[in-house]
Each structure stands twice: as structure tokens, then as C-alpha cells.
View 1 (cartoon, rainbow, N blue to C red):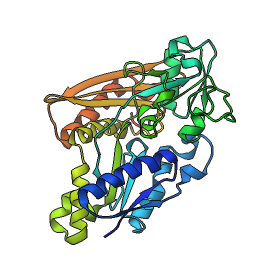
View 2: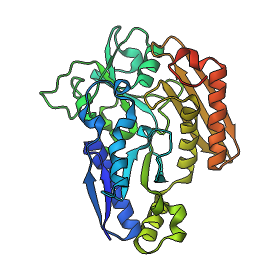
View 3: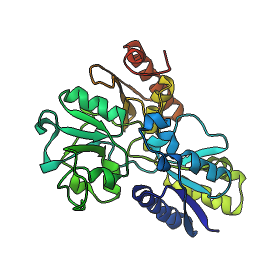
View 4: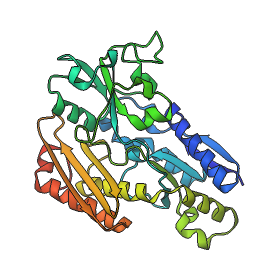
Length: 327
């Protein structure tokens, strides 16, 4: 049995998928093959919000799973819509890496040291809102493109080609993506969560498969399906699963898309699961932030925690400062 693993063809997607494929092969003892899938988000131009949010990066991969073009798909979890996909299951969330956002700037400048009016690029309304809240004087610009393309817009960063445009003073990216492709040397500053809360699910991967092949059904499958289910179960990290479940429950209750100006970060400490979340006005003029913890260390407990924090945000006026469907 060769397990076919669907992936986008970007450098970051290929890198994180190959790493996952190697782990699956090592655990399951089966050969693997990468299947490149072109998504709507890879073809279209314009801002993510205009295209319908980051869900545009996953629809084609999910179709490939349902059509049995591939057996497993690897996503950046923050790209997944919160709604269930009929016939598909998130089979594993491997151990999370660094959740933080980072600043990559010319001359190694930190956020506080950027000159007034400095041009800072990001494709995320969440990052843009929190940047404007921290530094209202910055010229925050919407940008698209893969990680290398974005880094190329900042002059003098390590690894940039001489022909790179270098038209920005800085860009904000996820530490996780830079770590996976070996470009952490471009980072000028890591933003702690009190400055910039990450996107729900940031730093985590989601390994998705057809529900019939998922680990929870392993006892009712035979042969190759059971082998795949067992390998997927082995890659799952339960603390990561609980954390991202809580974070995504905030988004779901707010009825906010993946591109909404919503940040959330959950983590387990001892017998408690802690969650902090924020909703920001896109212009940075107002932010509501709430936090709560639970000792319910189950997916149901994590979901309830996310809903409770979302309710606190709504009570504090979150729907009035951002474009949320919830009320």
C-alpha cells in the first residue's frame, strides 16, 4: 500500500507535508507519495478577505480526498474553516511548534524602532489590526505571495535575491512557517502574545482523511485502512488538539471567518487548559480581550471553553468593532 498525501505546491506546504509524510512512513511502515494539488487561493490574486478567506486554500485538497485522488491531506490548521466537512475527519494534530508572529525588518529593527510611517506588509487583517493598535503611525500594507516572495520585499534580509523588490520596511509572518523552511535568520523580533495574539490554530498542522479511514474507526477497518488509522493516531498530540479545539471554538461561536481580525491562544498547564482571545477593529482603534481556564481536559471541555470566551468577547462589544455574524 502506498499512501498518497495531498499538498499544495508552495515551498512551505511541500516542506511541512514532506516532514509529515516521513513521520507517517516511519510509524506505519508503508511507502508514501506526494500529490500536488492547485487550490483556488494559489491561482487567484487579491486579498484573502476578497477571495472568501483562507478556506480557499483547502477546498481543492478536500475535493481530492473525497474523489480518492489522495488518501491524506496536510493543511496549516489556521487555514481550515471551522465547519465540519462531510465525509472527512481531522485525524491528527501533530505537536505544535512556535505559535508566535514575527517581525522581519530591514537592519534588524524591532517594532518600537521602526521610523514613523514605515511600510509594513501583511496579508492578515488580524496582524494588521494589532500592528495598528501597537503603532498607529505605521503604513500597514496588504500583501500576498509565498513566504520567500514576502521576505523579498524587505531589503537586506538574509537569503533574499539581489533582484528582490525591497519596497517595504518590514513584513509580519508566522514563526512556524519560517522555522519549517529554515529562514528564522530573517527574524528581527518575536511578538509575545500580549502584543499580538496568533490566529486560532497557528503553528499547528491538521492531517485530514476520509472519515472511514480515521483512527476512531480503526477497530472497524481491516488491512491497509487500519494500518493508516494507527499511523495517524500515533502522530496526534492531545495537548495540541485540546488547544486548537478551544481556539477554533472561539471562531465558530463568533461566526468569524479565518481571515477575521480574531486572535486566540490556548495552552495546557498542569490540570488546566488556558485560553485567551481578542477581537480587534481593523483600524487598530479598539480591541476587546478576554481569558478563561477550565479543568475539562476533553474536546467537549475545550469546545465549551472556547464558546465561553467568545460569549465574554461578545458581551464586551466584539460584534460592534469587527465584521462578525454573531450577536
